[in-house]
Length: 261
Image (cartoon, rainbow, N blue to C red):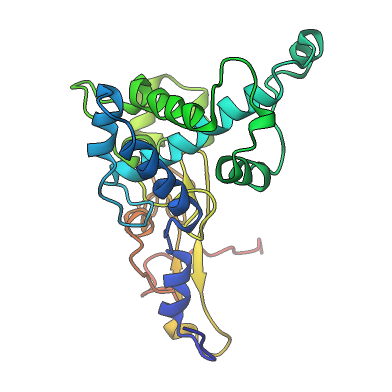
């Protein structure tokens, strides 16, 4: 609903918005594909695992991960089909070939299903879409050790928030120089941008003259010194999306710079 006025908590709510608006239609497409899977055991497992859709990039969501992976699998197969005749010499020099503005051409392809763009090895667009679903079902990256499908939080983790020195020191030092490796909600393409190596560096909502109602959330804490009591302070609030005050609390330390006399 449109509003004329927003509180600080309203603004924080926008920053924490992890609704999967972008991928919802892909989940619906996946469900249609799986409904026609017949007795295929791979697709039958995927059908059961993807049933529950809460419409968010939740850390505990299996269907969000599978839907995201499905879209990626369809893109790979469609790109390979469209660019399959591209000269190999040029392809080797260019690395992995990708078509830009992906959603702008990929979604029309899978909905219109133009037969004249199909190449050898693809009898129909329905076959391509089903093959992409099998790619997801058999990909080890989507499976836990016990064979069950992973959740989004299994792969979207705060695993790269570290002090710069962590790259130069042995792994044993990472427990002191890195933030806890925990599951994160959110993703690209939504306000709650959170990925293992990319995301919002802080969340803030404050208005001039109303600083006392202001909110700030900062990962890793205010201090960059691992031995400081303020190292990691407030990090858990950032992970959980819990509001913390913008203004400082009571003074705990004072640093005085005194000129020589």
